[in-house]
Length: 417
Ligand code: ATP
Ligand code: MG
Image (cartoon, rainbow, N blue to C red; front, top):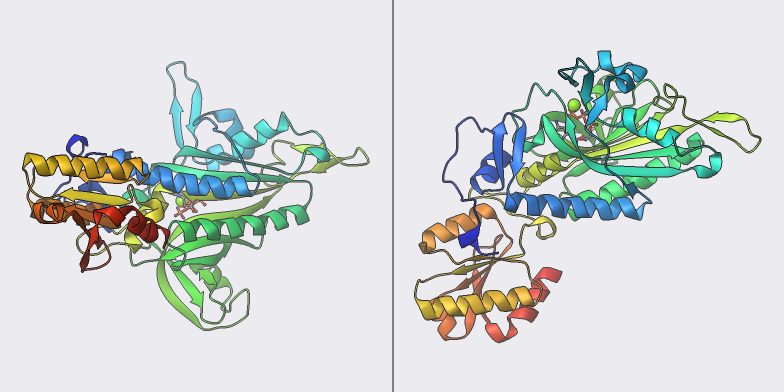
């Protein structure tokens, strides 16, 4: 993509209201735009990152048997009354139309998926089933001050699993746990992210959160110094020692909850009377699990973990582009060479943002640091003349000259690393 036609622009500064690092860099870099507190537009660069994250999650969900659907956001009041959550869920957005009919804007989808499955599942032979979606959630968040970490409208990947017995649910829960570790590793926050014990609600002793350690975290977790598992505040007050290994030595850290996995057991299948016939024809309860990841929260967390004073430093797997090609100098023959190099790189399959704008070197480098694409190529009068190009990694100070003839193989090596 050519930067000259990108309709968004970078900004030197933004409103002092934006306190969080993720919203400052993402807004200044032209990734997102804030409509109001907790509600954001994803702009072309931001959507590219978002889609890369989405695809990594989708691959991992498909690998564990997930079937993708999209359920509605506009939901009948009756479904929410059936579980009692119409009255008990504080952050539920409720609306009434001009006919007086009432609806909920979905904050989660148990109330929709369970009646949906009831239409298709009759026998134990129809189980297990794993269904997921990427869908807008609406929650009346009172603390939406941390950029895209806490939206009032936000996209969640929510997976729901249905099982004929508890053992099958437990086994699948562990499979999802592994898939979640893969996801957080692939998007570049594997080292900072801890599996953390959390309260399980009335049906299960524990649930698990995936908590990413960063000063921007709104949660406090305690990391067991023996087995490296996390314990959240609620659990730590109830049980002073590690629920896994029993050790008592913890390190306190601030962290962001990037994911949550939960054994629901029969909590939602019961109110909707979702049952199957077992081998002997007897009716039997269905066991459920639910598993969430907030995509905006994950994207914001990646920025909180990977940045410096100048801007974002994207992990390659989620960067909007692999290479930022920068043209220095405004004369026509040079611009032609830049165009050629850009065309060759894109034809070879590289994802390139080409800064072909008529701006100074200072402006271009500052923007490039802010936008944070991991690899940078600089074509100037001098490098073009010697049929070379300057290569610089966003993470390193030093640059190196590469012969254009061997550029493709050099870049392939970098991208493979
Ligand atoms: P929190 O305690 O931070 O409010 P939660 O317990 O309400 O989170 P869940 O209902 O378990 O969150 O949602 C599953 C996942 O969805 C979370 O792990 C998080 O990644 C994401 N998520 C939850 N609320 C938001 C939000 N307001 N904005 C963005 N992502 C969110
Ligand atoms: Mg919440």
